[in-house]
Picture 1 (cartoon, rainbow, N blue to C red):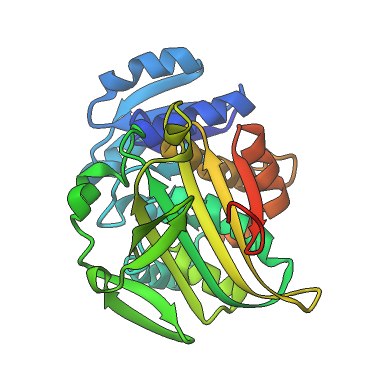
Picture 2: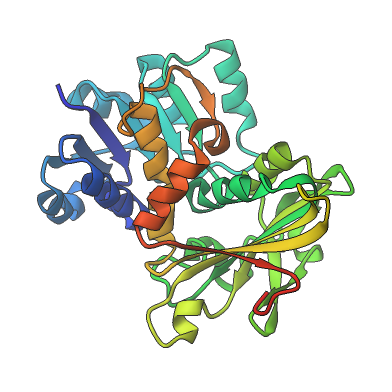
Length: 338
C-alpha cells in the first residue's frame, strides 16, 4: 500500500510547492490536498496525478480524517492556533509537520508531547523557509570551534509572489511591534521588535532588519552555543530583481567566531532561491518528509518531537536544495562582495 500524505492548505502558495516538490521526487506517494475550498485544488491534483482534494475544517478535523482513511503524515501549511492537527496526529499515530509555530507558541504542544509521547514523528518546523537556513547554518558552523555571534537576515522582495513574509501579516511592518526572542551577551530576552532594529549590509546598502521570533533563534543557539543570536526580516530588492530577472528569495547568514584553524573570522553564507520564498520553504518541508517516511532510502523515523537540525542530515539536505536550483555561497569578511 502506498504512503498517504495529507497537506492541509495544500493548494496555497506554499502547500502547492510542497506537493510539486514531493511529486517530483516520488511518483507513488498519494497526496491529499485539504482545505476549505477543495475545488481550488482540483487543477493541481490533475497536474500531479495520484492526488485528490478534500474539504478540511480545522475545527472538525476528526470528520475529515475519518472520511479520508489511513494517513501516514499530515503537513500543516496553514495556521492551526489550537494545535488541532497536532493533537489529532498524536492521538491517531500519524506523523506531523507544522510550519507556522513561532518561538512563543511551542510550549503547550511540547508539554502535551511529554505527557503523551508521540508514536510517530512530530516536527516543529516554524523556522524560516521550512528550516532551510538553520540546516545551512548548522553545516557552516562545523568549520568553527566556537561561535560568538550568528545573525540571519532574510530579504523579502515585494515582487516575490508570496511576500513579503506572508504579506497579510507584514505589510507596512504590521505586527512587528510584538515581542520577539533574542539572545544577547548570553542572555535570553523577549523584546519589542521595533526598538531592536539592526542595520544589515546587503550589496552596497544598509537595510533595516526587524527581528521575528522564528524557531531559528533557539535552534541556532542550541547548535552553536553562540552568545548572540537573532533572525531579522528585511524588505528590499532581491538579487534576481537587481539582475533584471524575476525576484529571488535571499538569506544572509553571518557567523562570527573562532575557526577550527584557530583564526578569528566573520563569514557570510548567502542562500538564494531564484524561484522565490514559497519554493524554498517547500524544499525545507520536502527534506523533512523524505527523512520521516524513509523516502531517502533509510529507515522511517520512530516517534518523538523533532527539529530540522535533529531530523535531517545537513549534507543530504543541502544536496537536495542545490538539486532544485538553490545557490549557497560563502564569503569571508576580507573578501569582496561580503
